[in-house]
Image 1 (cartoon, helix red, strand yellow):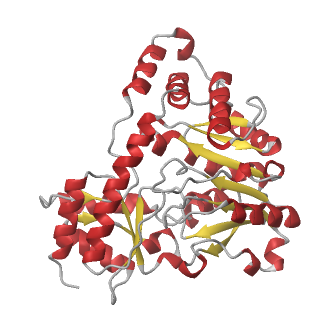
Image 2: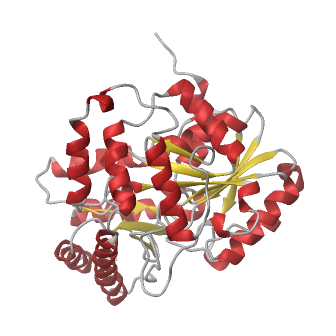
Image 3: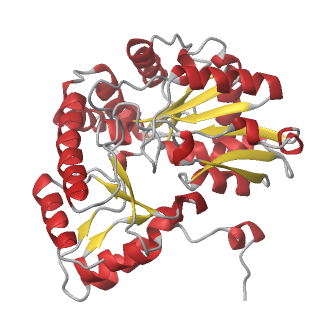
Length: 387
């Protein structure tokens, strides 16, 4: 018999694996399932990006080991994109590193700076990998609750001094998954001042900055004066360009933080396939009209779902960003009970809020990853249920 390591035994079940299992059980019974669970866009990658990959595939030089840090041309494209989008100046050789998807970078980052016993400040509810990466590095997670009364922003003043004295990294994620909350530059400025006061690294997961609606445009934390002294920011092409399966992203910011992550990658992976990097260059440097079109599609879906849920009496607000809707479950239900009811009685997959952390109890998350007709069908099915 072989035993799993203690770090694996400490891991909670990965949320979306369990959702897939439950979904498969229902589908096996012949149910037409509407999957609003995992945040995987249903829209195809734009054709000019696919064509760039096809051309890159014919280049023999792309068939060899890539650099763990990424092609300089890709890092330059990422730096130029950051300049054009946020006005942030970056040295592509020292302040940008390519990632095999942002999940990889987020999971590996604590290995560069966290020693056993160090504390990592992690928001909750949140993307599970912030905690998982901490666990793998031997660190201790201190959870910062994201509550409606604080607009789903962490209350930094409530973190105990004995925790702060051992803390190494502060994780943030805005626009936020799962709550769809947003943060402004004033909040980021408070975070940067707080980090400098307590000698903290700020790690900002910015995967959803390009999925915004109405009159809101998300900032980068690196726009704040002094941010590059303490911060690293993770950007993903997955949601912006509907490239989830391509596994390409980049991290930018403080040179030492980027160097630390690169050193980890030098020892654990051989870099992103250069064909994918060339496709990513086409995405970052090409016409951004495709991104605007994606935003318009997700906005229409948001409106269909939010208006439908409101008519059925749900407490829900239209998100300013992300392709998620965060809504309260009906009175008398837990998050898990409500999600199970939707799946078993209506064939609808949603994610229970408590799956992202204890403060998510009482909420459920809907991913806008099906078309408007399927969302209308989902609303129709929900309307037939008794609560």
